[in-house]
Every structure is written in structure tokens, then in C-alpha cells.
Amino acid sequence: MPYISNTDQQRAAMLAEIGLKPEDLFSDVPPELRCGGLNLPEGLSEQEVCSRLEAIASQNSASLRCFLGGGFYDHFIPSAVFALTGRSEFYTAYTPYQPEISQGMLQAIYEFQSMICRLTEMEASNASLYDGGTALYEAAMMALRLTHRSKVIVDDSVNPIYRTMIRSYLRNRNVDVELAETENAQGLANRSAILEALDEQTAAVIVQNPNFFGCIDDFSDLAAAVHSKGTLLIVSCYPISLGLLKTPGAMGADIVTGEGQSLGLPLSFGGPYLGFMATRSEYVRQMPGRIVGQTTDAKGRRGYVLTLQAREQHIRREKATSNICSNEALCALTALVYLCLLGKEGLQQTAQLCADKAGYAYERLTAIPGVRPHFPAQCWFNEMVLDLPCEAAEVTARLLERGYAAGFPLGRYYKGMNRSLLIAVTEKRTREEIEMLAEEIGAIVESLRSDIR
Image (cartoon, rainbow, N blue to C red; front, side, top):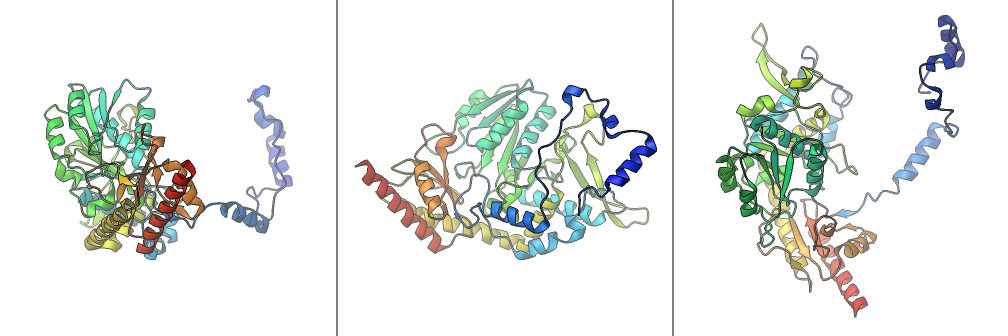
């Protein structure tokens, strides 16, 4: 079926009715800006298009055994997730916010917000954002509005992709973004560097737990220190880890964000993903995006409505908190279904499996001659940094040829870490896969040593 169903005769009849020729429709466009034509090939049949797309898709490596992490993780997704979220009333919905016809979707968003609050131990959540990096930038902007200050301190163990996004968005604003170098000995947030940079103009301190290196931290002491200066603490977190770890809310965080991809969303070569944000109730009016609330109608029946709408489409532009924070309703629904299927015990079991399998991988990999942990403290959740006796990028390139996405070479983002490899282990990785990875790395390391000799 053609994309435009009108025939040439029908288009000619419409133009004749209004007394115009086709070129008259573009008379307001200067001649030098007009396109002289498109050099497009002839159209293909449906069968030919499918064959062409299948050939292109087959070039993707979709069967790699994945030990990649750095904020995006290969978790098991129960088949019931897609069976429910793929229903037409969810899958084809667009901007489902009219309460008179969208009670089901509004309730789902309300329940998503409730689960994010329970997961993070915070008091209010919005309906979601584009992704984890966008959510962290929006949190920084929220802190700047709340404090009327002009400086943000970011620990450099925060995901470097997120840090790049923050700098990009704040580049044209009068905001000072200061980087605090991680404490190299332990891989944790450098308290002394953060407190030294903290001053009366600091709106927020941004940290991550577990951080980009996989190290676990407790920011309770840091929260007390920054609050004494009237500064807010923003914590980016990995939601699966909250099945075991102390929550950001319990640490004293003011705003919590994260990437929700691990909650039932496939890696999908980069998206779509899901950002979440939660805060304390006193700050809720500066939270970007939409917030769904529960209410009752004139007959006392429970209902759901948009309680706050902070986008410029809904309120005066000068009072809007953001114009780029449209929520990811279908992805948020997916996270909700995933969390409902797992339940509290299931989330704890998943987190424990991740930690236990990562511990086994650590033992097997550090037994390889020349491979050692980069940070001496074995305090991580399911992700670790290992130092190799050769370039990490060379090792991962060879492992790709053998069917392993073995990890992330850190030299791309951190100076002096060209031999450091970030490896993540989820509940999907089997004992056999971990053992084979260790054998492959051992063989490659020995081969590269022999080449050097």
C-alpha cells in the first residue's frame, strides 16, 4: 500500500479546484532553497524490502555472550512482560493523559511512580524521562532552580556518558560544572575533593552508586556534609542493585535518578530506554515532567489524573521546568510489569544472583596470571575493574571474534587505564560462560605475551 493513497488524477483534481499548479504551492520558498528533485531508486515490493532489511539486520552480532555493563545490562526478561505490554491498548497508545478515556494507562503510570518511590525510598516520582543521562541532567537543573545557585560538583566516577550530557546541556548556561576526581586507592567518591570544592554557590553534588567502576559507596556522611552548606545531594543509581543495597533515600539523597533499562527492557542496540526520577515531597513542584495522582470523582469513585504538568506545552513557558522531558510511557509500563512479576523477593533474588555470579567471575578471572583487581577493596555489586597485562581494547577485540562481548575498556574515558577492563555479570551468565570467558582471556593474554617476547 502506498504511503500517500491519492492518485495522480485525484491530486490534479484538487489542484484544479483551488486553481493552482503544483509549483504554486512552493511559491513562498526562495528558488535557491528549493530542491530540484530527489535521486531515489525505484520502489521495492514488500518481499524485496523484507529481504533487504533482514540482510542488514543479520550484520548485527545478536548472539554474543554479554559481559558488558557501564549502565546498560543484559538481564533476563520474563516472556510475560512482552505478552502484556504488547497488547494493542498499551502498545499503540499515544499521549494517554485524558482522564475520561485513559484511566488504565494513568493508573499504570501512578503504580510505576509508586514502585520507584518504594525502590528508592523517596517520597515522590515523576512519570519517567527519556533515559538515565537525561534524568541526571534534569536533576541538576532542578537543583539549580531550587537553590538559586550556579555551581554543580560531579564526581568523576559518575557514568562518563552522563557527565558528557550534563556538560553539553549546561554549556550555554551560566553554570560552573566542577569535576571531583575519584579516590584512586578505593574507587569511591573523593570526599575531601568534593568538600574542598563545596561553597555557597554550589547547588548540588552529583554522585553514583554503584559508580561507573562498580564500586559500592554509602553517601550518608556526604549527605550530611553537603546539607550543612544548603547544597542538595543527587544520586544516580542502578535499580537492580537496590534489591540488596542501602537505598539513596536512606542515605539522605534529595533527588534520585537512574536508568531503568535493567527493569525489563532489552539492550536493543541503544534504546528506547527509560529514565526515572524521585525526590522529596518538598521539592516536587520543581520536578520536571508529569506526575499522575490519585483522586476521587463527584461520586466518590477512585480515579487518576495528571496532578502536575510542568512542561511548556501545559503552562506558561517562563514557569516550565523543562521542554524535553516527555515521559516514556510504554517503557515505564514495561518496568512496572517486570517489577510486579518479580515482586520484592524476586528482585532480591535477582540482585543476589548478580552479586554471587560476579563474585565467582572475580575469583576465576583474578586467578589468571597477570590479571589483578584495579581497586584493592572488593566492594562492588556485579561489576568490577580488572587490570590486564596488555591493552584491554586488544583483548576485547579478539574476544568479539570468539563470540564474547567481554567488557568495556576504560582507557576510552579515563587516562592511564588503557589496560583496565570493566566487566559486568548478571543473572543470565552461566557458570560455563564465566569459565569459558576466563579460559579465553587467559589464552589471549598468554598469546599477547608471547608476541611481545
